[in-house]
Length: 319
Image 1 (cartoon, rainbow, N blue to C red):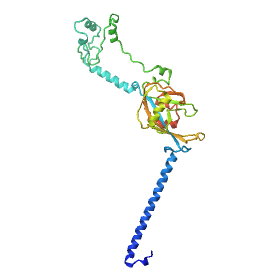
Image 2 (cartoon, rainbow, N blue to C red):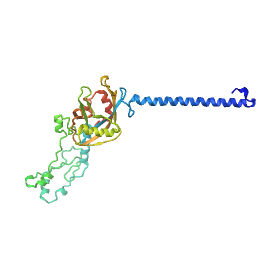
Image 3 (cartoon, helix red, strand yellow):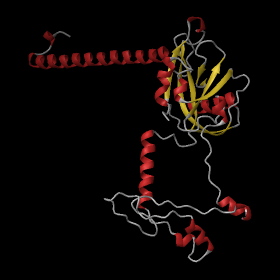
Image 4 (cartoon, one colour):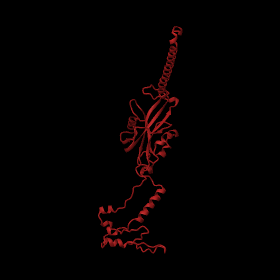
C-alpha cells in the first residue's frame, strides 16, 4: 500500500511500524540460519568420530574397546634404601641405650638355680675399659653409657619338652627371593613379591603382539561388563578379582593399516583397573592369546612399543 493513500496524520506511525516489522523479520532469519548450522554440525560430528550408537561401520569410524589392567599388589614390604637402613639401625641402638636394665629378677628369680646359671655367664662390668675422662655409670652390673650385653646360659634342649623347644627356637624369616625369581618364571605370581605385577598377553601377530588384554564393546554393554566378559573369555574362571572402578584409568587409540580397514579405520581402547587376589590366569582356546607374562612397570617397556607405553605409563604404579 502506497503512503499517498494514508492520511497525513498517520503516515509517521506507519513508517515506524514498518521499521519494527523489518527488524523482527531479520532477527528471525538469523536464528533460523544459526539453528540450521548447529543441526548440520551435530549430524556430521558423530559420523566423523564413529562414536554414535547404531551407526554403520565405515573406514573412518573407530572400534570402541574395553581393556583391563589386571595387577597383583605387593605381598611384602619393599627393600629398604641405604638411608632407611641407617635410620632404623640408629633408632634401634638408641632404644637399647635408653631402655631399662634387663630385669633379671623377673626371668630368673633370686636364689634359684636358673639365677646362679645366668649370673655365672654374665661379663663383669667394672668400667675400666673407659678413658680417664669418662665417668662410669654402673648399675646392676651394667654400664649405662652403652647398651647392655645379656648372655643367656646354655640349655640342654634334649631334656626339655618339644613344646618348650619350639618356644625358644630362633625365628628365621623366609627369603624374599622365591623359586619363580630364581627360574625367571614370568608366568608365576610368586615372583617379585615386593613389586606390583601386571598382566600382559601376547597375540598371534608380528607387530605390537604384547599388550594389556582388551575386547570390543558389544551392543548394550558397558565398559565394566565388557571387561568382566574379557577376563573370563581370556583367562578362565579360576580367578578371584576385583574391579577397582568403572571409570577408565588409561586410554589408547591407533589406526589400522590400509589393507586391514574392512569395517573400521582404527580402535579406541578404554582401560579399567582390576586386582587379582587368588587363582591363576590360564589362556582359553579361541581367545587368540599365545603367551602371557606377569611383569613389573619397569619390565613392561621391554615388551611394548613406545607409543603404547606413553599412553599407559601414568596409570601404572611405581612400586
